[in-house]
Image 1 (cartoon, rainbow, N blue to C red):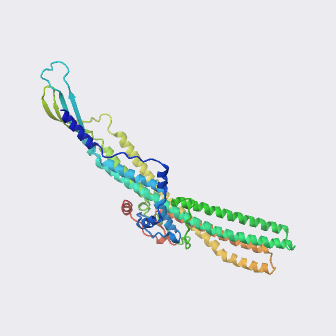
Image 2: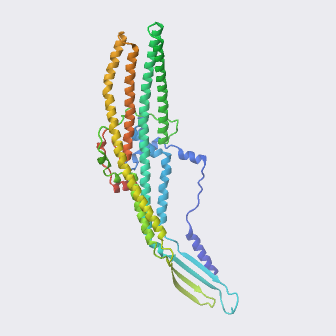
Image 3: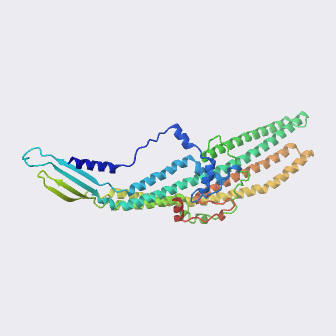
Length: 473
C-alpha cells in the first residue's frame, strides 16, 4: 500500500513542472545595458534584413550622413520605446500557448481505517480515482482562434507603432534640415544688418546720417542677433528630438546628408483616391480587424461554454471487508442558475464596442486625409506665390543697391528692400517645413509610403492578407 502511494506521488512530481524560476534583477547595470545603442555595423546588417509591411530593407550608410529613410529605419531598430512595445508580442504568444493547453486530469487517493464497531476481519479501505473535465474540449478551438487573432492584432499594432516612430524620425530630419537653413539665413541677415549699422555709424560721424537712423539700424541689428540665437536654439531642440527618436545619446551628433531635398509634393490624388482601400492598408485598422475577429471567437467560446460541465472518472476501491471494486463515474453540472449569460453579454458588448471603434477610426482617417490634402494644396499655392515674387524682390534689391552706391536713394531704403527679400525667403523655408510635415501626416493617415516628389507615383498598397502575412513572418 505504501509503495503504491509512493509511486503515485513520484509520478505526480515528475509530471508536474518543467519551468524553473530565474531571477531578473532591475539594476542600474541591466538598464544601462538595455539602453545601449546597437553598434552601427549591426545596424547596417539589420537594415538590409528588416521585415515590415511598409518599411523596406535599404543600404544603410551613415558615412555620408543620415538620410530621412535611413533615420526611419534606424529609429525602428534602436528606439527603446519600441523595444518595450514589442514585449507585448511575447505576452500574446504566451496567451496563445495557454489557450491551447488542456486542463490536467485529477488524481485522488483516499484511505479509511476501521476504528470502532465490529472490526474483526476488516481491512483498511482505500480508493484511487482519476477524473478529467471533458467539457474543456468544447470551447478549446474557439479559445485558440481568439488567442491566434489577438496575437495577429498585437503584431499589427506593433507594426503601426513602428511606422509612426519611423515617420517621426523622418519628420525630425526635415525639421533639422530646415533649422540649419534658417540658421544660415539668419546669420546672413545678421551680417548684412551689422554692415548697415557700421555704414550708418560712419555716416553719423561724417554728419551725413542722423542719430535716429543709427538707432533704427542698431535696433535692426539686435533683432537679427536675436533671430540667430533663436535659430540656434531651434536647431538644438530638433537635434535633441531626433536623437531621442533614434534612441541615441543627447550629446551625439550624426550629420545629415548634404544632398537631402525637401519634399515637393507636386502631384497628389484627390481624397477619394487617397482613401480608396485604406481599410486594407492602414496597420491600425488591420489590427482592429484582427481584434474584432478575436472577439468573435471569444463570443463563440462563451456560447459553447453554456454546455454543462462534464467530468468523467475511473475509480478503483477496496472497502473494509476487502471487497475490490472498479467503477466509472460521470459528473454533470446542472445549469439552473448560471448559463454563462453574464460572460456572453460582456463579450457581445465588447464586440459592439470594437465594431463602433473601427467605424469611427475609419471615418476619422477619411476626414483627416481630406483635411490634410486641402492644407497641402493651400501650402503649395502659398509657396508658389511667394517664390514667384522673389525674383522681382531680388531685382529690386539690386536696383536699390546700385542707386544707393550712386547716391540716388538712401542706404536704408536698400536695406529695407533687402529685408523684405529675406522675409520672403524665410517664409518659403517655413512653408516648406509645413509642407514636409503635411506630407508625413498624409503618409501616416493613408498608411503608405508616398514619394516626396510625386504622391501619385506611390507603390500599390498591399492587401489585407498580404500585410498580415508580412507582419507575422
